[in-house]
Image (spheres, rainbow, N blue to C red):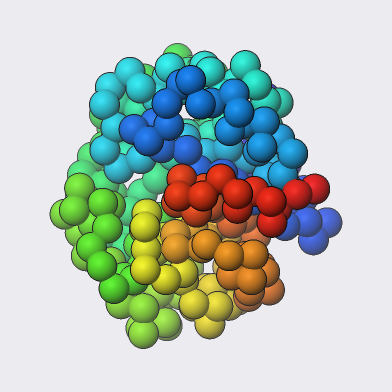
Length: 241
């Protein structure tokens, strides 16, 4: 499975909205993968993201191998650390946490990853990652030791996203964080989208079909759902093809 980024761009050009299901290796038992992915395949999901802020080494590869037994959807790594990189996936979001100022998550971890990626078949997609505060500390904030951007400073958020694009990033990811108390507000999504000419991904705190529709309407090109499915797989019923 290649040309992930090219296919995302082509879909957006046709005004097609995309949805990624995020699976955390620490929270998904291998014995449950078959039934879970069966629901993913019957939904409107277009991509599967795999990763988490804190994942034990080896779990990601085992999960990716199992997932790919049951679906033809592209499986893309969404790694919290270099230990989550596996060549068994189709691609990787090469995330730079541009909302923070910790050099480890701006460039340090990326340098560590090169030895794993240079002989890999993974499609590497440079992605600007912006954490936006949502009322509680997230795992990303705790692990990366960075502060999220304040959600009321919308112009600063939009300018940060544009700076990432000007640095050459191919995707921009607005993140409220796993288990966020509320989703990123449509006015933030809209302001960021107006600044960008690259695809915009939005995730964190989205738990209802209405919130999905509002995010799309505001300008999100790809929406990521994770916690909603972890807490209630019946949520798939709202996302049937």
